[in-house]
Each structure stands twice: as structure tokens, then as C-alpha cells.
Image (tube, rainbow, N blue to C red):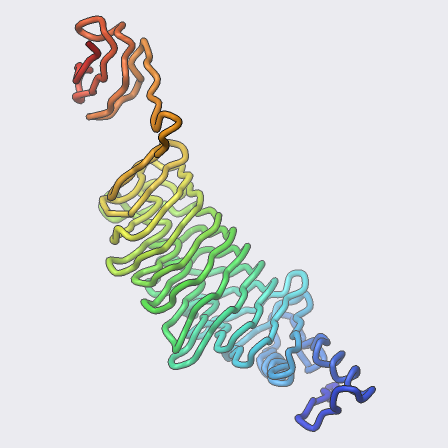
Length: 360
């Protein structure tokens, strides 16, 4: 085994030529194979990886895992600020122990390019936050989190737990597959970001924001998550009764008995491009915009064009009634189909169009 260089607090001061050597070391990469990791999927690489993480902790160093499958039997605690774990190529952590393979308990850390395979015994792949500790400004990027049994309740690809503060963390361009819930927030895991992720084969919720607040989702797609039956559906995103000020922009093609969102509080906003027979549940988002089907305001006021110079709203007359109406849909007829031959709004009763007003 290669004996690692350990940087102590007795360091050269600024201006000393040796300082550049120290700085280069702090920015260097620490390869887990230098500590004895094999990466054959059979050898237990836990001790080697933990030692690499220990040496890198506090030195702002990057722990690198070359291509390979690393059997892990003890959780990796990322508990030092500025630490990076980076997988190069197909770098896989094989994890089949209760709990989460990687737990982030520090600030400004980065987990990048890792694949974590969570077996049937595992609770999940990645945990952010820990009791009474801060977990701020951490970045999870380009990771693949793969479960083994999506029907087992309590299993999650990512879990953000309540700590002293679990804020401002971002999960970006990740694939999260085959978990009961793709990602789960405890109630005080607020103001975190999801950017361009793909979440598939979830069984209950793609992302469960629960009662957390002020989280934002920019893009992303939910797919391949058929629900159980019409009375027990699957939801791409869930916001609980106390969750508020969350903003979610995404696409969804989840499958049968699946809906794009279950929102139980009116202080949230959704912009969704869905391809599903089901839309929102009977809930109260502040604003829900269905890109394919138009705008729907569930609560509050909709103001379109508040201007003294230009007309605030233009509704175009038409000579033919729209096809496929739903009860109480309204359109403006140019008089071709009205009872008096004058322009009028017409309403679909569920069986026929009827005039509800007209020009004089």
C-alpha cells in the first residue's frame, strides 16, 4: 500500500516557496486505489475508501474512484467541508446494507459521476443532512442512483433530513430509478434545488417535498411509473398540507394511474408539460399551467394584460364550436350558431352548446 502524505497544521506560511507545494497538494486528487481499493465488485473496498476520505477531509481534496465496482459495507460519511467524491467513467458503489451508502454532513461538498446501486437490504443511496448539523450548499451532479425494489415502503434514492440547516443543496442531471420514492424531504429541508434530473420507476412519489418550503425544480422529467390502480395512484411530485412556496417546472409521462402532482397546499406553483390521462389531483396549487392543455388557475386571481394602452384580453370569435368540450367550457361565437344571429358567448352544458349572452 502506498503511504499517503498527511498534511498537518504545521504548514509553511504565505510567501514561503513550500506554500505552493502545499497548495498543489490541497488541490490534488486522491485515488482510492492508492489506498488498496480493487474495484472488482467482490473485494470489500470499504476500508480503502474510508481511509482516502479521511486523508482528504479538511484538505479540500478530491477523492477519485476510477472505473470499477466497489463493494461497500459501511456508510461513507462526508463530514468535512469542501470535500469532493468523483467517479471517473463507470465507477459504481455496490451497497446492500441498511441505511444510505453516502451521507453528506458538511458544507460545500460535491458528489459527482458516481453510480450507487442500492440492494434490497439498503434503505437508499444518498442522504443529505444529519441531526443537529448543517448541510449547506452541497452539489450532487451526474450521479446514477439505482434501487433494487421499488415496492418496499421507506426506500428512497435521496433523502434530505432535518438538521440544524439542510438548505441550498442542489441535485443536478442525475438519474434516480427504481425506488419507492425518488427523493424525500423531511419538513425542515427547505430551499433546495432540483435541476434537469430524470426520475423513473418510482412507486409512490417521484419527489416528495412533504411539508418543506421554498424548494425549486428547474426542468427534469418523470417517466415509467405506472400507478397501482385508479384509487391508489402514483404522483410525480407531492407537496404536503404544510408545504409552501415551492416552484416546480418539469415534464411527465408516468403511465397509467399516475398523476403529475399531488399538491395539498395552495401556496405553490407548478408548470408542467404532461403526457398522462390524469392531471393534478383535487387539490389547491396556487397556479397550475398545463403546457399542452392551457392555463388553469385553481385559487386566486388571473390578470391577463393589465394595461391602459392595449386591450387586456382578446378573445377571437369563431364560426364553428370547438370539438371535445368539457362541461362549462365557453367560447365566443361570431353569430353563425347563436340563437339570434349575433356574436355571443356559448357554454357547453355537457350535452349541448347554449347561448349565455350576446351583443346588442
